[in-house]
Image (tube, rainbow, N blue to C red):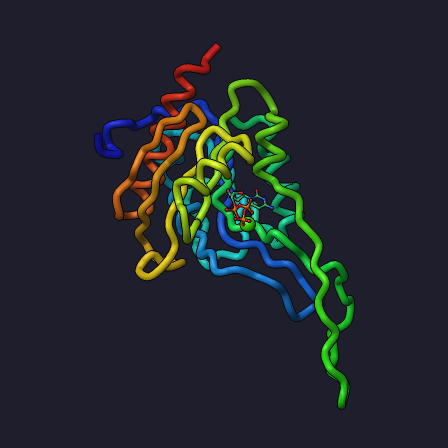
Length: 229
Ligand code: CTP
Ligand code: CA
């Protein structure tokens, strides 16, 4: 089945997608960040809109234009992403966490620029944990039948780590991809295995991020069919 085989199957649904990479400020001019481009999340938002869904895209520091017909909420930090996603998730049928959320943030934010001092070594940066948004939403779904999807990039023991992460997070689907060599951040293509809580595994061969996005919506859409009450 190609993407054109499922027009409108998400009509009447509200889906929330997070995309990009959060930045955790250290002072007014510096931050801790990551290399997420946001392309996979934007592909998820575009394909869901094309299939008829109302889409809220919570975007963290991407350089991509807002997709047409999608509600885009631009945020910066993991804390802001959590707030925006939880708010949009309240009436959502599905939440897809494609964003790279910073696991840690600086314990202290310096309100003035941190200056170097002659002859002094720099102060170490102390980090604290950020909340796990995916685990929180999975544990505390806004309503029954709400579907929760996570993403994971792994370098080793990809499937074993993915299975363990799916169980730990408590989500319905986890899209696992191996990072390395040609599968660099920012690429237009991706290869993944979609792990489901029911034990099924759906391999998606190397190809455009839209194809992977459509595969995710296929699995979500099929589960909506089962959960309809
Ligand atoms: N995630 C989240 N909140 C966090 C960290 C991650 O919601 N504070 C989500 C990501 O958006 C992604 C999924 O959790 O959908 C997996 O992210 P990943 O970084 O692979 O998982 P972690 O639990 O942070 O594990 P690791 O130690 O491997 O980074
Ligand atoms: Ca992480």
